[in-house]
Structures are given as C-alpha cells and as structure tokens.
Length: 81
Image (cartoon, rainbow, N blue to C red; front, side, top):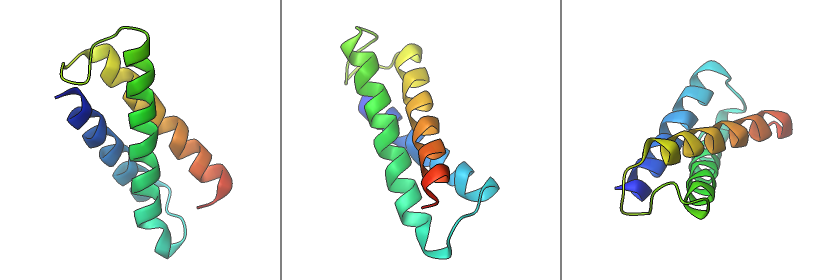
C-alpha cells in the first residue's frame, strides 16, 4: 500500500503542477513521470528513516512523498521541462 500511495501522490502532484503551472505543450508526460519519481524518492527516504515500509501506509511517509513530488516539481519549473 505504501508504494502505491507514493505513486498516486506523485501523479496527483504532477496533475496539479500541470494545471496551475503550464509548461511546454509536449511536457505533460515528462512532468507526470518526474513528479512520480520525486514522490518515490521521498517515500524511500522516509523508509530509510524508519517511517513505515513499502507495504505499510504511514502518514509520515506520505508527507515525505508529497515533499519529494513538490521538490521535483520545483526542479521541473526551474529547468522549464
């Protein structure tokens, strides 16, 4: 459940970023993939610190995944992807 929730959070962050901060027309898929990757990295960082596991739903790991997705969205905005 944890891994799936991180992917869903990354997808939602990507959709929100594309809605409120539109970029190039062809960059929609790249934005979604990169925010999902950011959420997965955030989730794995939370797993490293002991906040849940891949199979367990933990709000702290979800918060880390959200932060990872948002950080990746900022990187996307800076790089103008």
